[in-house]
Image 1 (cartoon, rainbow, N blue to C red):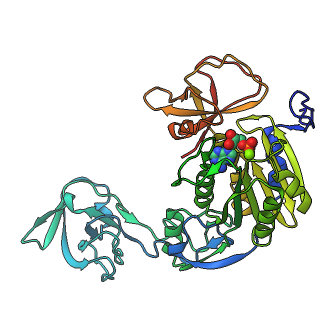
Image 2: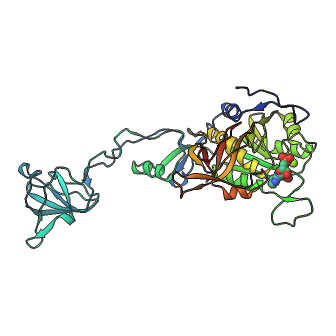
Image 3: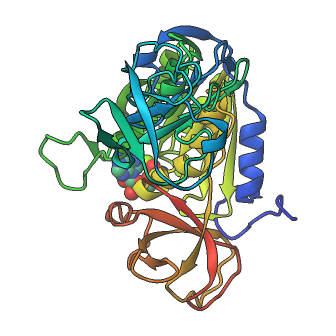
Length: 417
Ligand code: AMP
Ligand code: MG
């Protein structure tokens, strides 16, 4: 693979052209995973990342119990799996949370879902299959009965000592519930990483103000802060910073001491108005990359002391797509998450692609669920400035470098939802 070839047709200072995979490898291999941890209550655990394995010191369920509202029965040897009607005398009533008495042979206990099956009970019949007879003192069952019907055995879900949740898992509602089900009331999680962000460009105006000639509203501020919030980062947002060397240095210095990562958008090309590169270079170290990807060719990666720096391109689609491709796995890994890579799904393209291009493209698509198999439809305008393409789309199709194909081709699809 030739990742280091030099592209000579664009900028005055040729930069190395990196493949997407190489850029991702350099980024993610440089990460120092956070080691700050804290104890949190289960109610605060959603989206947080476990800092230890969780093992269960109980079995769940902790006792054999009924899966039905019905009757627990002490079935006798000769009654097992034989046909004919059987009559059982009702001698007990057991609601969930209560313990019943030992059930004698030929007897039944009224039992409710989740209640412990009493000693002696060897099967449970659903109430719909039991006919109450003799003034409701007995039940009669007309079908053959097997042993252990409708009994949830001790440890059916979790065995004593099972590792139920691994270190590095980002907690979903069901994970928190599983911890609760074994009686764990607090979880040790990694502290949220702190991400500082600011935006460059004298053309930027904050939404809510009047737009002047030649200016645009700052939309990256809102896409990126929202994506950082979604990832559970603590965000320090300096907003729009004036396009000047001193203002950029000042913003970087303010964030550096407080943050694990600094992100900017805009100003990472080598235009005269781009101050991010010289400012980071003055305070730390920076590599300016030209990645073989569309959208989002320019990307800057560096460090100021121990704080990582990623400079994203300014175009709104490029900023979001490069965040998704590079920053999201970077942050997830830094945050201690085991499965930090973006996961692709194999999806059939519902469009032709006739012009092979040297850069890998991540095109905005929407899945059409009415076809078999599901197919991806392409948004008509794929410019890196067309933010509405991101709103229309539900994901990205990864079109490999130098490829042409007709519809029906199966490619990687990444969900943006
Ligand atoms: P740059 O990377 O600074 O050369 O910017 C590339 C393009 O993205 C220009 O058209 C900018 O006006 C636009 N842009 C830069 N920053 C933002 C932002 N925060 N919100 C929306 N558009 C932006
Ligand atoms: Mg700019």
